[in-house]
Amino acid sequence: MGRGPTGLGPTGLGPTGLGPTGRGPMSERPGQRRSRVPAGRFERLARLGWAAGELAAGGLVDRARRWATGGAGGAQTAPLRARAQRLALRLAQLRGAAMKLGQLLSLESVDLLPAEFAEALAMLRASGDAMPATQIRRVLGREYGKGWQARFRDFDWEPVAAASIGQVHAAVARDGRRLALKIQYPGIARSIDSDVDNVAALLHIAKLLPVDLDVSGLVAEAKRQLHQEADYRIEAASLRRYRALVADEPGLFVPAPHDDLSTRRVLAMDFVDGEPIESLGDPGVPQARRDAAGEALERLVFRELFEFRFLQTDPNFANYRIDPATDRIGLLDFGSTREIDPVLSDRYARICRAILAGDREAVRAGAVEIGYLRPDEQEERAAGVVDLILLVCEPLRQPGPYDFGRSRLPSRVRDLGLDLAFRRGFLRAPPPETLFLHRKLVGSFLLCARIRARVDVHELIRPRIGAA
Image (tube, rainbow, N blue to C red; front, side, top):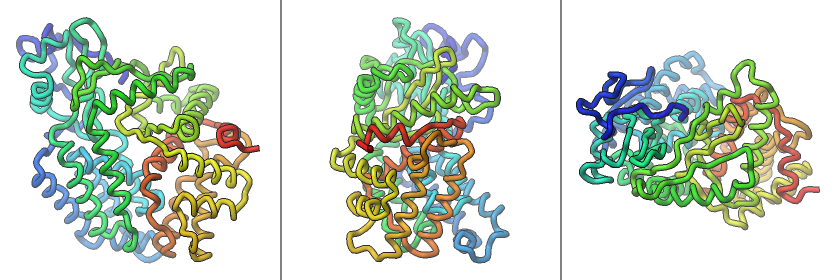
């Protein structure tokens, strides 16, 4: 969100709908797709049906599974990747819960989906299609009422970001406040339940998940979280709460909400200048800057889980900006937040102490407490899950700086996860209450890898969990 708003006349529209640069009201950013958001239930269902048909065509998914499990089908990688990318495009056009569930799966899929589908769905973490100006006008007219343009001195019709639930526009309020306006896509809130159910059904019909994998708990948790995310009044409260929690972190800041211009479907907040956090990964950036940012982000995750017990669960790269003058990191999106039960927090602290101690029996006991394993679990299955936990927690176990940029941990986790899930049938769906925590942990790892940070995670977590 580094661009400032462009002037568009005293009412935000100008006499002809053109800004001073002569651009149209929705002049396109290079490479950004634009499409009308399908708001009707039957239209959204039909589009998902098309996606299901494309996946089933030619038996490509079956060949993908055979390839993932060591059988024939490796030669089908190229057409499989094309099908997977078309699925991602369908979900990006739908936006809403359909796209959000795809984003979640792109993180969870390190141990659930074939690699081509995991890679294609990862495209959804970047952005979705942008809404056309006609839909923007309708949404703002409904939320603000007739003559809404008079509330703003400037309004930039070109979005600075387009995601799953809404898109963000730069604006200047009548009194001169620089704002970011998060505008929700029409029909998104009422389509959450049906979208989540339909995408889950699509994945099962297309045989993209292990046949006996019960995801009903994850589906219910996804619905609960998405209904919360679609109410911007809740997000405004989360912004205030999080600003207070990180007030003692000089390297972090959170924008303030503006209630007079916020509604349930429009959120007004401070406009945050800065560069994409990924820019720290560019050639020539001093390693010390990368390491400092990675350390701040990893420390924040542990504070959220063990101290705040309040988690911002969407680690999308676009939700972080860095001020090049001060290296302060702006945290931007608090639609997806979750309270952490103190009991669950304590259980994670215990299993982390066991992981640091290399105590496999204690790790297994912790996995049973959290719900990754049953108390009477078959020995081979339990050993496989403990192996996976220890692998995932490699950055915690390694004393000294962990080099995220050079790590091959995601591919190693995916290989072991596919082996446990598809070849050996050992994996079950994780407990629903852990879904968004996993999302934060995986996303934070990917972010540190992208900026090529080296962080002593072992030392960061020890004081948070009471480790010796």
